[in-house]
Image 1 (cartoon, one colour):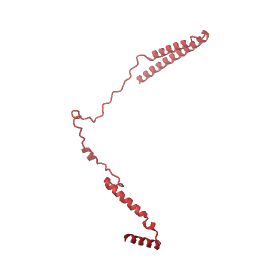
Image 2 (cartoon, helix red, strand yellow; image 1 turned 30 degrees about the horizontal axis):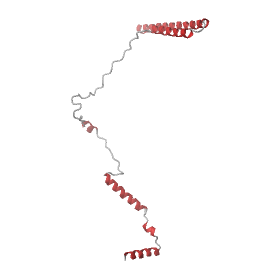
Image 3 (tube, rainbow, N blue to C red; image 1 turned 120 degrees about the vertical axis):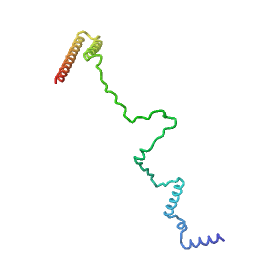
Length: 164
């Protein structure tokens, strides 16, 4: 009996020209409603609103000043609290004059360079070797004279500054 009634309703719909798919097809609004219902179910599952942005309000300075941090039990109980003063500034480093003065360093440098040139020119002929050593000796004399002039200038400028 039920099946005959369904057959009659179906035949009437076909005869009336109403296509079967259009009555069964979902509208876009149905999809939206279903999506909103599913979203509400998920929100209830997680106990949060998915669209809401959590806002953290900054605490007032008065609240943060009153807060206290408790140490972990047994740690640092006997230690004094850290001081809030900046550590003392270390004293300025005074550079002491070196053991060797500048003229000693210059003499030592020249001696090493002379030994190096002598070892490099040893296999050369004496006619080629002698001018190289003479040229180096002239260079050494110029360096020594420049060192003497520098020390004289420094002494004279020190005297001039003290005389003021």
